[in-house]
Every structure is written in C-alpha cells, then in structure tokens.
Length: 360
Image (cartoon, rainbow, N blue to C red; front, side, top):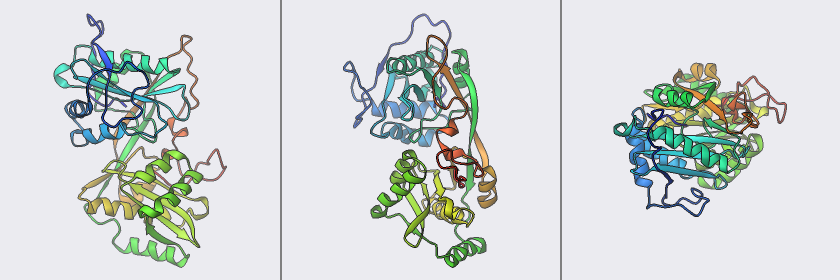
C-alpha cells in the first residue's frame, strides 16, 4: 500500500524513467528478460526510510518483507532512474485479475516532479500486462505493508484520487500498551485455570511444532494465515486430547500481533485471550512498549481484553484497468472477504457455515 509521501504533479513535462529493480535474493521480482541495473536492495530501503516519515524505524523491514513474499506470488519492484522513488506491485494469489500496489515511496527532496505519478502508472502498466483488470491500493495478504494508505500520508491519497482511484473501504490497526505484563495478574491466572479444568493446555510452537500448526491453520482458515504462522517470530497453540484448538502468532513484523484463530469447537472458552496474552508478553520481553494489532476487526474483544485502542486508520482504493471500465475482482465490496483477519467474530464463515472466532 502506498503509505509514503508520494506526490506527483499533473502535467509534468516528461514522465521520469522507471525500470524494474534488481533485488538481492529475489526469486520472483522480474518475470521479464529486460531487467537492468545493479542490486537495488539497499537503495530501496533508503528510499523507504526517507519517505515513510511515520515509519522510519520499520522502513527497511518493510522492504525486506515485501521482497520475500510467498513463492508463487508474481511481483515486482520498480524504481526511478536516480533511485529517488520506488513502488512494489503484485498480483493477488486468490484472483490474478486483481493487482495490488504494495508500497509507493518518493524521497521528500524529489517530490513535486511527478515521480509518484510515474511510478504508479508504471505499476499499473506492469499489472495490466500480466492480466490484471483492477488495481488496488490495498494490502495483498499474507505479505503486505499496511491494509491501505495511512491517512497521515495525505499526498499519497491525493495522488490516488487525482488518478481516478475510488475509496472503497476503511481499515485500522489497534495498539496494545505493553507497560504491564499481559500474562500476569488474577484475570490471566483465572483464564489458565479455566482452560485446565476443561483439559486444554497451551504450548509454545517450537520449530518442530510449526508444521502441525500450519496444517491446522490452513485447514481451519487459509494458506495465507498458515504462511504467516509458520514464519512468525513467536507462535503459541492450545491442545485438548492431542487436537489443536487454537493458535496465535506475532512478529511477521516485529511490532505486529496476529494472526490468531480458535477452532469452532473451542470458541467462547477463553482460548484466544490466553494465547494472545502469551504473544503480547513475548513482545514485551523483546523490548517493545506497544504492539500493533494489524488490520484489526473485533474492536470490542481487543479493547476489553487488552485495553487496545484504534490508532492507525487506512483508506483502501481501487481503479479499473479494463477498457470497458468494469473490473472483475472477486471481492469488490470488502477486502475482508478475501482476508478474514478482520471479520466480526459473530459472522459466519462462508466456507463452513460456522461462526468465526475472535481474531485480528
């Protein structure tokens, strides 16, 4: 998602030159034979650090994350000639007719010269050439920067609207304060005792356990969450009679908590609260003062359980790429239909008809 300060002047004299970047270790960045340039990984991180003024500490990690998506993702990174701006773009794994702009950033000193506009148009062309009928300035789960454009990066939103993008959804992150240990106190002890009375135990997902957790997550939800859980810094799960009932993960980005989910048979027992507390406690032990609950849905659950509050707000945009002006994406109304991370826990899962559990 383009949350950087990506401005572009309408009517620039000539469109700045844009080329595909060459990334160290990238296996899917370029699927054409005309990629030029030297290794641009460090330059991309530098562009992000300069442009993402609200995310300086995380900028390099964002670039590294976007450059290591799932193996089957078709994606690219495009840069301007003087390495003053960059854009990441990718095709949706669920519907290849839907393209995403994952990150758009222009160095502040280079803004106003049309670089942001040129990069966004180049990303559209790259996606259109590969069959995309719609482009979204929105997260492409499971590997994304943010749900959409952070409203604080106003120039990026202005650029999108000047090019005809329509705002179609609002998403948010919640912040959980970690000044106190979330896993300590009478409430946490009571929840653990309640699970024990029901024969449920909780465990840390050691490397040897990750395959089983991944299989559970893929079966209950989808491969996107399974990909995240397998790569998370920390992961915990609940078991009863040898059967996994729920999981929670953190650290797909250092400050981010999630995803988390509980199987239908165990919902309402407090499994999610216990697992989430273990993750948040680990994040606190890692030195974090707060945790981001990314692309959060159930506001009430996180607010009650952890005193979390909605803090970062994102606008999601889309634009048709077809000559007829009619996109063919499978989830035009709400991106949460594609990523149930944000689904209200009272809603039903369209695949199973079962009530969804509480999850970020």
